[in-house]
Image (cartoon, rainbow, N blue to C red; front, side):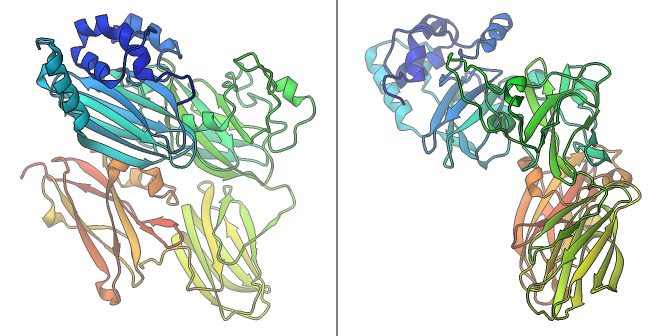
Amino acid sequence: MLPGETSAPSRIIPSLSRMLLLHCPLLLLLLLLLLPLDSRPQKLPTRDEELFQMQIRDKAFFHDSSVIPDGAEISSYLFRDTPKRYFFVVEEDNTPLAVTVTPCDAPLEWKLSVQELPEEASGEGSGDPEPLEQQKQQITSEEGTELFSYKGNDVEYFVSSSSPSGLYQLDLLSTEKDTHFKVYATTTPESDQPYPELPYDPRIDVTSLGRTTVTLAWKPSPTASLLRQPIQYCIVINKEHNFKSLCAVEAKLSSDDAFMMAPKPGLDFSPFDFAHFGFPADNNSGKERGFLKSSKFGRQTSPKPRVDLHRVCIGNKNIFTVSDLKPDTQYYFDMFAVNTNTNMSTAYVGTFARTKEEAKQKTVDLKDGKVTDVFIKRKGVKFLRFAPVSSHQKVTFSIHSCLDAVQVQVRRDGKLLLSQSVEGVRQFQLRGKAKAKYLVRLKGSKKGASMLKILATTRPNKQSFPSLPEDMRIKAFDKLRTCSSVTVAWLGTQERNKFCIYKREVDDNYNEEQKKREQNQCLGPDTRKKSEKVLCKYFHSQNIQKAVTTETIRGLQPGKSYLLDVYVIGHGGHSVKYQSKLVKTRKFC
């Protein structure tokens, strides 16, 4: 706390007294027990819709308040290694509850706990000082029951259809750096639904690729198509990495930067000036684009270094072409569905693409033992060169085709050694030769653009990719199916690897053709929701014939279909997904 600053609970207590006595005696007792009184007034958030909407438009209203309002997303700030605590009261048992925490530019540690309040807090006590002191000791001496905890930078949720009454507290901590975050809590999650829902296939597809343009397409949010709520889509383009939330994008950009306006009619595919994207800006660009602005405090700010990150909101279109990109450059694309009523957003699964090279074909150099990402346009060709710096007996090429199959050719000093079609993950070990140079030719699929990861090494014992079995299918045992569980098995290897299994409920009409559309096999467990995770375990067997493991997945619903995915994670952190398996529980047992 800064010198002279008054804590949030002490600022809000005096003005809440009359309202709380009438409407929320439990919360009044909570606040009275927290800190001494102060004389400055502030109103308590309310669920009266007209007043509530007026309050949430005032951003200063919730600033530094330790009380979480019901049904509004609040933004706040954490200093590194300085915990922050929020409170709210659930007055009745069996109340639905949903809490969402969105980290912005740093991972968070947070936990949610509940503490039962003493019966005297119901407002029916005598009001004598002695019982109040006893209640204070009772509240402050108990730790409460932990309901949920999480550590990371994903948007994470706690949802309960029936929560007990009591005092709830949310504790947050950032150990990495000072950071922003957002919190949303509601006791009416079914009717609120402030976050847009994602479609069954939440990926962004690259439908066209040029030297300076990339065309993106995506499926609409059911919130717009089915619930008829106003949704607009915002695209984020950068050259570093994908973002997991719009909050993270806002933290990366200057706080004064606003969203770009939607393109005017007739300019759908050239919505904003990308002329300097990836290039140094000229002397006038800062003034023309508004990078030199007055701060909200009236103080002049100096021009900030430009970041290669842009965002644009395009309304409710489902296709968009980004223009004026730099040739032969990899860009990362993220899509966010934004509910314009609540201004709350949900992230699609981001993608990346490398723009087409200039007319002169370039050859990419592969470094020994380093994984390289490669993007190939539809029916396009890429050349990669591998020149080991020392003599070697063998060279290993590991290729992971993320989308459709690619044609691979390897030549050593002009002599063709290998020509195969690769789908999924393949490893090729070739005989080495002193001072040899290898040329790898990759040809994309006729169906569409291809993405792949490739690793070349002369040290086969130091593989970044995990070792893989010949058969990467998941087998389900039909006779072991029940109404609430399924049993599956998959093959491992002689090398000890980490395996993680995930489940996702799908519609009954989900079929093998739809399963094939789960294209990007390079997306790892970090793209999955935590609620979909079943377990992770290590497994191997020196006897390759016995390198098989089984797992029973419990807690499923009768007659429901589930898509199961197994990821094997190598020592270098790279993951490979087994073929997805569609299973269905028995309807009657």
